[in-house]
Amino acid sequence: MSLNNGQSLNVGGQDFTKNGGSSSRAPWEDARTVLRPSTPTRKPKSPKPENAITIAVSSRVLFNMEKEQQIYEQQGMEEYIKYQVEHETEPFSPGPAFSFVKALEAVNAKLRELYPESEELFDVVLMTNNHANVGLRLINTINHHHLCNQCPCIQLIFKDNLCQICEPGIAAAIMFTPEKMKEVSDTQLRVAFDGDAVLFSDESERICKAHGLDKFFEHEKAHENKPLDHGPLKGFLEVLGKLQKKFYGKGQRMDCPIRTYLVTARSAASSGTRALKTLRSWGLEIDEALFLAGAPKGPMLEKIRPHIFFDDQMFHVEGAAEMGTVACHVPYGIAQRVVKKGTKDKETPNASK
Amino acid sequence: MVSTDQKTDVKEKEADCPVVVAVTSHAVFESGAEDPDGLYVGGIAFPLLQALQKVNERLLKENPAESLLFDVILITTESQQQQESSRITESIRHHGLKVSRFCFSNEEDFMENLLNNNVHLFLTTNRNEALQGSQKGVLSVLLDEHTASCPTEQLRVLFCGDAVVQSEAGPALASKQAAQSFSAQIGKMRGRFGPFDSPISIALVTSRGGRESCGDALRTLRSLGVNADEAYCLAGVPRGPIKRLLRPHFLLSECFSSN
Image (tube, rainbow over all chains, first blue to last red; front, side, top):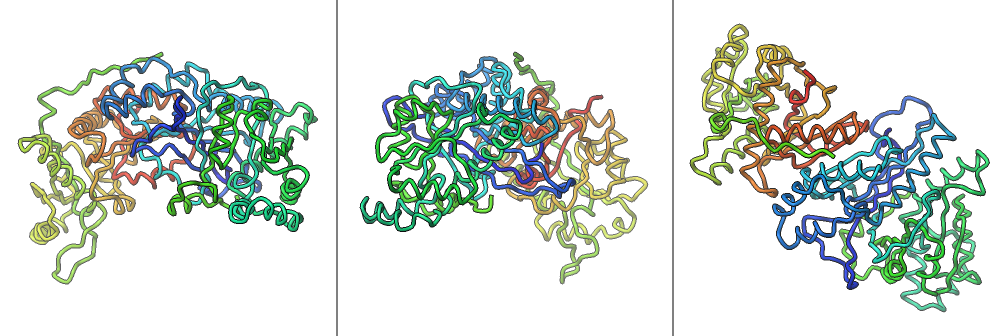
């Protein structure tokens, strides 16, 4: 399975400790992993190159490594490695990304049934900042959980200082662990997206922040027919849509194994229109659009039960996590409290992909 | 569930001997090139030699009495170079490279010199020479232009964990033993340093097989006393990008060959 021209999404990991603060990151560890842009590695032989959708997941979100992380923070790297090696045959328990990856597998299984020759499948890459010594424990864990039996090429990357692998110009998302994860479907992959600064650019949010809500509504109404610019996660929605069409093509519209949701603070009555028109102009479909008109997203997400939810505002991410949804923070746009110039450059969305 | 075997096979006596690395003058100097003083210009193996030197410096810093060091020999492999002995030694000195011995041999006797000097690793840019070395049981590595752009501050070794991937010099039974022995020495050297800021970096790549393949390779390395810093289980994905990222000075695959 090739990475050639694949759409990629990396989901990073950072533990969300129980008392509400995010755990401090070790300086050597950048838990945020990033989207890899398609890198043509060699000329495709066939006229239509097949795309694999590559999803890279950090080991710390795939599995629960809280205890080990504590050891690292309190006792240092050598003790951490020693501990990992000593417990090599003890599998980790599942982390927040586990059910997401299982759902990807379920989709792969169904795609294989319908299109046995196709390579358009999810391709999972496990990336970890861990020392290679921890690799064996991770491999043992993957075997224990029967993970990725449907992803023939689970690739593993064990390296510290992951930043070197991730190229600039890629979107990133940080996954948070809800205190109590709600049960999700294991037959249908559900992905929920915020609108502004996630699927769309943050242009409207800027107006809202600078000039207030009224001005925002005015502006959106006036520009209703002008598509918003794209945001960092547009590409992912696009590939999901592509896979969905493959299911529709085989008559599986009603119980499609992939379902997408837009969960936005925009309201159906006014500003929501522009969002829908933008999606339409991109040729993208979304299965359900929830216009909350500013209401908290947590309860709604709890009803939908997505495997993963992307939002640019920590307020919403926290709100979602509080109610048991696995939420990811997309550190893009005007909403970020700490704007580092370098980081922002890294996270410019890659337009053509 | 498989646990690992922590025992290493390295004899204590062996571990304290220097690691003898022979490099051909063709690899060290660019052929046909001269600087204004008539001395040779640095070639493909230059950064590698500098990295080896760096490792030695750091090893001695950790322990001034360290005996597990790289011992670099420069070897000529053809009569023409054999004639240029003084220019070669001058050039070495000029470039600040530390070479302990010079073996001015030619095509016929260079192999003998390698064997007599108990060489653990033979570096050359000539495929035939690498093959010859390999056939005589000397771990031989063919360097190419990629080596020229490798870092000089850190020695990077890449282990290729798939038996399918053979080194350019071709497999040889005796070579496997030499490879394992050398790997154990490298592993031991690596162990002299902590997880960060090490002058040696060891990476493992498995190209074809899945995670079992990677797991097996990690265990094999561990049994040799080698703890990899990084591991990549590519499971069919092209190796090119990873190699470009890692910029290893050389690749070793003989440890994992099926014979």
